[in-house]
Length: 307
Image 1 (cartoon, rainbow, N blue to C red):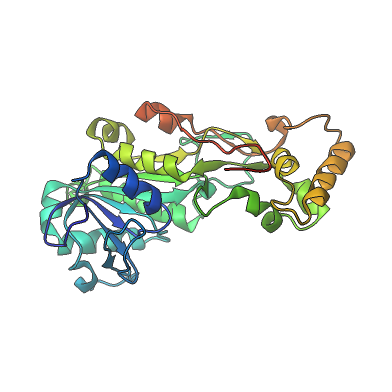
Image 2 (image 1 turned 120 degrees about the vertical axis):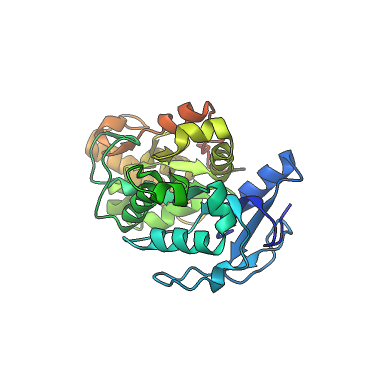
């Protein structure tokens, strides 16, 4: 259940958007008394019926007033992107200054990020241990959070707590139907011809990944690192387009024709194509192995029906 700011909660969700529509039902269905609080920019009522707390993160500001309504929490989930070299420090220091009782117990920070941390120009397989793009502004902020929480050479770690980063593949589920993406990412035959790989993760698996972070034994394995969270499939765009067409009735056949013609032109005899020829591939085994779980939903290769 959601709790007022005066109470200590198990989880504080900073930015209760799409992810929370999967996470809150998961947590509360298994434990109706689970203590959590969530923020939105407006303080609106959430789709689950729970209230939210109005909160807007102000980059570079040391004003603690926006943090006063927030409860002290064991775990803080940051769902919105932080960028650059100061935003993580600002958020962490302001929250802990406003909520010293949380600092005393030690906060666990979870930052949701993107697999764009690893550049698409990278060739071959990429996993959580592959060097990330140090010019990526989100990656810079993620690393700052990890450094704040895991630099054992200073006293900062004891004050900041512990952290991990969940770098998410393409998000789907609920209102996010990947069949509708085709017409957005490819307008012409040349666009289709240039499409290679897409990696995905369902909202229910994102929720399960976050829930795993709330378990002490699993947290001990996850903290201090960034992880790739995906459904373990490497999806060939041509294979998906041949199954889905343009995602709707209009233009559906045109997209399939473009794939067929491209197969002839590129000497591809069957779909899906060999992944070794399609550039960067994400290896998401590490996270699921660490938490000893498997993703339960993967994108369905079919043109109609429930996805």
